[in-house]
Length: 270
Image (tube, rainbow, N blue to C red):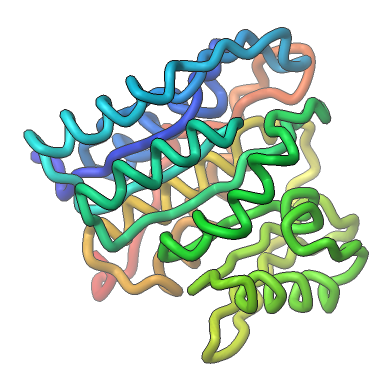
């Protein structure tokens, strides 16, 4: 099978394979596209938590992005872990040179086990510059709270926080609702035109490591194939839900999801 499109992933590596670059490559490949990478950090982690983070030199991150894209131009870009101001500045500089429109930003700030992966200066730079440069930002609830300075306890709080991020310059926002308790999960999509609430049944499992990375990569893949932004979010959520349901149950902590799950698309979305 020939790949349908090309996706560049800018993110950190996860030694356990469930999140980060590894999850991104699996997702893009499972959905039928070609994955390229620019690694921002090497993390030593497993399903129980993060042991350490080794950053990649910001100049070399920039070189990875530009050198790769000059040879194989990406149809879409997914950005994950950027944990310092130098790295964020380097990525912004490189994006200015390659000029790809469809960019998905997953603002990775807190690991599943609770470890903080980004400093406060970097968070401020995120808010003032990077979210304005991308097509969509996909925070989970803790990340949306950090970016919006709003405590989120309800679906209405999620909508309010998303609208706050639109005011900061984001074009589209998808806040992932998995951290709220309840039998249903609400993922909130907001842009300047309005709001869409995606409702899913909650799967009772501890194996949700890498769901955020996977969702943002799935959205980037669907965008790269020419699908509209809202439909890309809908299909990305469907892919992640199927991956959670069929998880392989690996590890002693928050285990990985199943990136090899297959999903059937309606004919008009193929």
